[in-house]
Image (tube, rainbow, N blue to C red; front, top):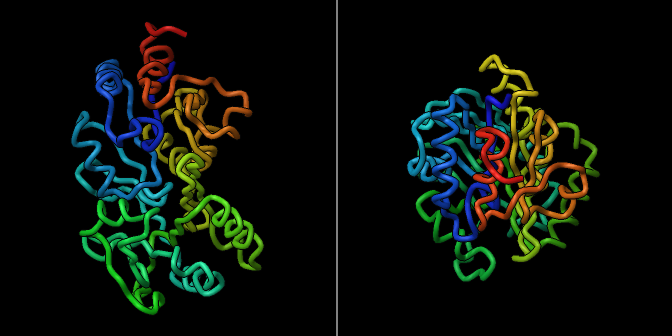
Length: 280
């Protein structure tokens, strides 16, 4: 019996316009009424995730920043794993050629959550992101000066090919064991996010810890995701479902495939595996 459903946001719960389809919202409410725990598990920051949960039921936990933080819907921090600042400093020093793509992300109330060395407001690939997050952004040059506390992560954004090269370089560093990587690729948009996080962090580890806190077993967990950074979460869950729009790699691993994020794929999975009244 499924007693907890872990759901990714982008490309999963949210449609292509970053909205929660009504069919998904209704399915979540029915699952909660059914006695099922819901946790959103995302690479997004808490500020963005909270704007999503405001549209949903009050009783939904949040695993954000690829497992670095677990928060209540009200913002109370239930668990926090930060990247040691000396590791962050070594990472950004070793990847200087990617400095225009680099940001430091901090666990702060609002302003200065995301620090860039320089923000190009005319960048066609990231202009929308900058505009949507304007209130959280700050410029600090050189970037290292902002490391007055441990960050949540070092974040890189850019074209798919360039970020794949970066991932290879990061994995080849002689101190690569000191951190973990979370990657989300969007080939249709030629855009990738690479997060350098604390070495024990992943969506899967955070979900494991949250499941234990609730006194549940992994075979009572359903996880739904669509991207590379969801893999550990899907591997942990007793039942894993990938979206119809998932990256090809996830579809090769033998997990069930639901509808796309624009077709209410989350609702279809919940109806089938939690409520038991959906179509296969």
